[in-house]
Length: 185
Image (cartoon, rainbow, N blue to C red; front, side, top):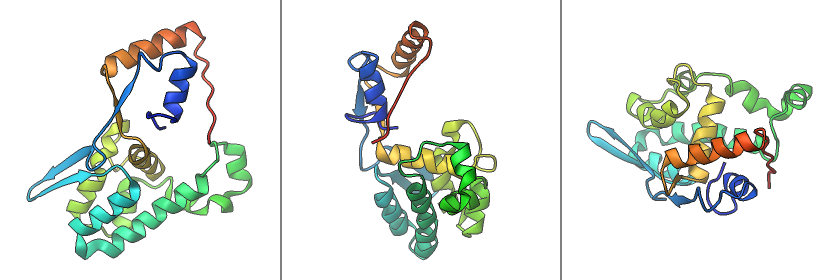
């Protein structure tokens, strides 16, 4: 859900005439977030391929595992490309979404264990898990992929802070009965 120019959030705000009230600054593309561990400071870059490469450089002994994990992440992204989640469509042809069906409901911890990732690598990757309020053992891998790829696509922060964004969204939603329509490119 890109917040920057041309992104879905920006389109919603423009449609609601809030794009000037709730404007966004792009976060540092070389490291919008930083994970600090004993002996390791890791900056999360703004692009899934760059993240994969940076992880491979930081954890060279685990490059094959990282590549295998990201192959699954990219496959899920590919399976869902252009699809709005529709359970009826999803269930009518589950083989079209075989990687999503296989790994999506697993917990982040289960997937990391499946790929036999080291504890430090798990900690770096799980750094975004709290963003949806669940620990890695409870967060579905599908949600992890969505948050990770969402940030990699568009790491932005409201220029006037989150409180302004929330007030603007609440006020507008109340005035329009909460209806908001989006389209996917």
